[in-house]
Image (tube, rainbow, N blue to C red):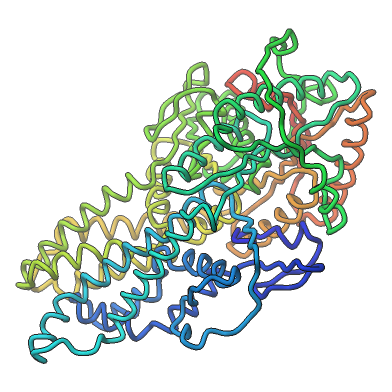
Amino acid sequence: MSTDPAHSLGDALGVRLSSAPRTVCARLDAVELDAPRAFARWLDANHRALRETFEQGTWLDRDDVESLLGLSIPGVDELAGMLEIARLAGDRQEELTPRSSRARRSRTYDTVIVDTAPTGHTLRLLAAPGTVAAVAEVLDALREEHRVIRDQLARVGGRPEAADRLTEELARQASETAGRLRDWRRTTFHWVTLPEELSRAESEDGVAALVCGGLTVSEIIVNRVLPGGSRCRICDRRRASERRVIAEIQRTLARGRRVRLIAAHVKEPRGLAALSALGRTVVDCKPLKARRSAIDRQPPAISHHGARGTAPGLLGALDASLLFVGGKGGVGKTTVAAAAALWLASGDPGRRVLLLSTDPAHSLADVFQAAVGDTARPVPGGPRNLDVRELDAARVFAMRRAQFEDAFDDIASSLGTSARATAGSHELMDLAPPGIDELFGMLSVVDARAAYDVVIVDTAPTGHALRLLEMPEAARGWTQLLMRVLLKYKSLVRPGRLAADLVDASKSIRELQSLMRDASQTRFLVVTRAAQLPRRESARLLDRLRRLHLSAPVLVVNALTLAPRGCAWCRATAAAERREIGVLRRDCPRRCAIIEAPLSAPPPRGVDTLTAWARTFIA
């Protein structure tokens, strides 16, 4: 089962998949989960109970409630995925919809293997039970005063109403799902990483987050390890770098866990036969020591032709005030974003540049090998006209939330509502559309344009990035709902600071939407690799960007073997990559330039190495 919003499971298996399980070979079925559709079914089935909860527990009227229900409920779409996993595993757990009493009979499985999204999105998925439990508490709080009045009038507690049953059901499902995830006898995680420093650092953070949540990580799998071969300037540097990273993984991540290696292949394994063969090549990793040799003291080896590339296509793409950089996880988008920012800032010292990461699993600090935080600041050794920031979306939204809640207190007090109703109004903030924290953080992009000539946004991998790009419409609807409430009660309470904040937020969202759709000011730089799975996902990403009216004039193909020389591995790899680039050129939309970024061994890190690497890009 794939839970990645940007599904690649069907591409890997070489079959077309949907949200219904399909048999791909004996004893193996596959499915790509459609979580938004599952949420839509849940909302349709529970619409009446939710409407009653909000109408009876707040001072929102029916129109306001309908607007609120038109937005997503935090964690529920992810929980739908969790419950679907449990159902397929044959667990004694119902579907998320009330049809559970007559749950459809379908095949169940002895083992369910879940192909998750990249780190940031996956951690949000695994936090879904806690998020839904909080939502259940909010709904319960909103129902409490109505429940007390109802019981007093009836003198005895009557049968639970539909809204009460919904709250109880959500709380139970969240609790059971959390228990299943933390039960090592039923659920275990296998963390996949690459033998690269950036992937290792992200893996440390990701595994630590899982363990902190009480989840079991039993195995670390290091993928695409370069096999042995003849002497080669590029391959020797890669092997030495990979050996050091693997040794560090064993020292830090392997405590009590198995470490296994999967060798790199010239041609990306795709289809049942190739994947079956790949499964037989997985080997246990013997203990390694991170020895440093003379080769480690040499500068990174870059597989390019020697002449500096001019990359006019990339220079043209950078001629924008807002530049998004994104792509499939593991293709090197953060490295490309950092190199592009350095190149642009160095080339024009009079131009102020901000490099902003919106990826929940930030990597800019690792790429620059320097401390980077939520405050924009230069990196040591970098151009003084370049600032770097890793967005703390939760902190930004918490500041907004505090302002909104203060105004809710004023409204509730003016209306003479009880302390319980005031608390319920506060808790409505917990029902803000999922991802709105990141969107409000992104609004700092609009503010930053006053201080910077160019803002480069290093996005999360494809699925998470697309949700952020699609988020402005939902966020604007949410702020407009709050504004309508203020207008209805303006005769009783002065709108004050909240009204001004909401107007500013709505205006900023509208400005961001207009800015994103202005091809003269905003571009999306898609980063990919010359292999089938990244190529296919990049094609789907370009199509989604077109439908979002976002300009994507450049495709950067990263880590190319441009100068294979006499090494058999490099020659075979270069030939395979040229074939993939041929397909990219054929399928790439018109007016989309392809920039080739050469393989660097080890991958470029630090200001000087990134700057030198950026000069080798060619069009």
